[in-house]
Length: 197
Image: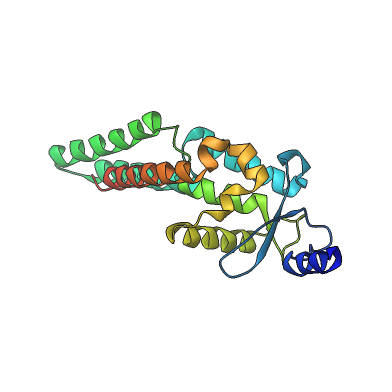
């Protein structure tokens, strides 16, 4: 009685690739993912990437958001310098100042969307991935997979143990994901409006 039961469980559970951490979840394409119970057990290549993402989260601004705002400030400043009409010059200076102020008062309580998916992807090792290496191509693929799953209403990737410990339960639950999504939409609309001033 016990042997058939164990055989059935062993057939259902995915076989863990050599060197991978314990099984975490399966994505919508049937690929298995593995993850560490704790951030401290991650290899240095992944830990360094986690540190970078956590710094962005602490700042409340992802690298791409910062680049977008910086480009908008530079463009407005350049147009102000080149403007011959004082009213046009003042308008560009005002735009540049408003965007710079946005950098000072941006909401830090909202984890940037890009950082959220990046952290989840770093913490989860796909079955065809080397856990000791940070591969930017696989990272981008995993982020896209998680983004598509979340947009379809499935945030299965948020329950990975290291991810939960790094972000906390308040940011990794299903309810928290819904609240974060609302915050992301508001932040992206605000940044879009700032750059289009």
